[in-house]
Length: 312
Image 1 (cartoon, rainbow, N blue to C red):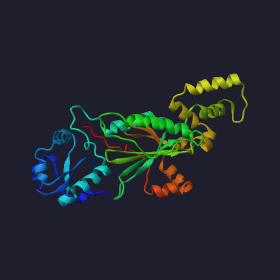
Image 2 (spheres, rainbow, N blue to C red; image 1 turned 90 degrees about the horizontal axis):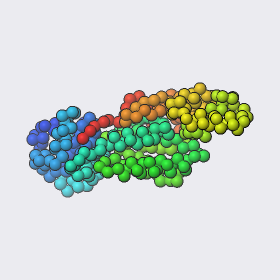
Image 3 (tube, rainbow, N blue to C red; image 1 turned 90 degrees about the vertical axis):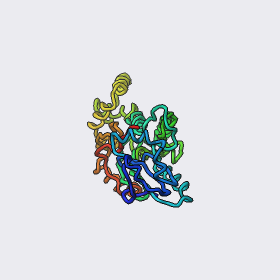
Image 4 (cartoon, rainbow, N blue to C red; image 1 turned 45 degrees about the horizontal axis):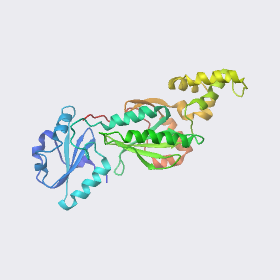
């Protein structure tokens, strides 16, 4: 279904008067992002007074917008247009020409990641092929003892973001479950998959008590209740970065509690710093969990922000 745009004819937006007089599906594209998909029985006439031209012309001042087209018989236009809109989820489709500004999808994705950053691990990015868009894979940490509570809280957060007005951005729960649900969204030409990972705990209070106890008193040491209460208060007052520094000085974290976070590195995803796996960690996971390699055979570590940014 994925159309290879490099094989299609195109003109710059400013050259729209050169478009042919044919029936076609057309794509408005900038920086490899599909912004709008439409149909036309006469392509040139359609673009003489297109209702999206003012928005695209404003964007064209910052980065080049090109119009690609796929010639096809008129009796196929409606079906093909529907398929391509469903596949690419372009920002400007299915929204009214705005009297007020549409919230860009990347801003909504950024909002999502800011709310979830302390419970996420960036797994990697798999390049697009003829079947799938470029795919960003994220794990949300949900140790098997905490899965239901974490899934419920995550669902509430994502549902609230999805209900935001003036945005096409949507999180879809593709595997609905009381625990270990899966979500998916699309943003600026990439697909984001949010999957559960039960092999690691969140760096929240109960999990961190053991690590703090190891640091202060050593593993397996019995401590009085008053000292334990002091330890709990210290943990509760720690920031995410302070907790991360603590677990990286802990042997039990590396071996048992936080094996992914222990070796992960910070990288930007949609402008938000997220702990991301290294290529070495990915290969170790493939060896331990072969199903991951079957699902994502070409995945590679995140080394630069994979989410393109455009404002409309």
